[in-house]
Image 1: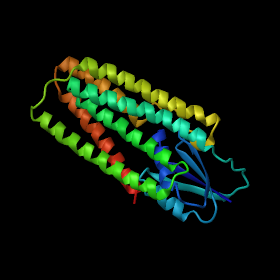
Image 2 (image 1 turned 180 degrees about the horizontal axis):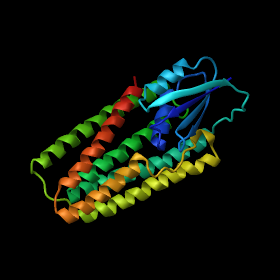
Image 3 (image 1 turned 135 degrees about the vertical axis):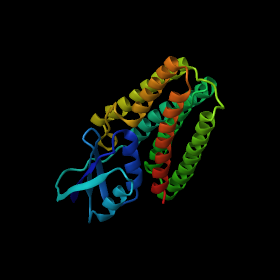
Length: 264
């Protein structure tokens, strides 16, 4: 058996972990994946050559590189599908709840920042849902759902950009900054809980290990919306809210393209 170690610079939260798992699912020579998110490192235990694995990881555009491949006699611990499913359902539920909450409050408060953040939550929900299908699921079913999800997410991102443009041209009121700040604080708490649950699994299930990284994209987005809300208060302008909306829609669009690439 071989152990190949990869450096993955853009792997900074559990969403990237699940995308990598999704991308590598179906490669039969892989025996185990060990993720070290804080150090942006992935260990792949596999049989045969490593070229196919490397090509698949590189296709995810996460700034990855193969550090080394070596023979190993390490014991492989089999994963527990039941534990994986339970954990993924928990984080999926949290992200789906905050997607609905931010979408509704974003529309009511006239905040594109909250609407965009809700779509970021939706993107995470899609990733975790795909991971659920990946646990013991058929590859053809998984790729079909991935393609549908990717196109849906991409359409939402495009519609978001159009709405931001419309509001830049003057067809919008100043958003309610209080709602922006309060809901974003709650979303920040939701992301922290999700990351805590994933980190908690590290001691129990090597196949699902992850870490709470507060510099992850989701947390940055939450903080960005909070800052935008404060700027809206001081400037009485919609511009800070629209800028954070554009920033998040870019993240959502890139996530959609990544999922579509995985479904090919």
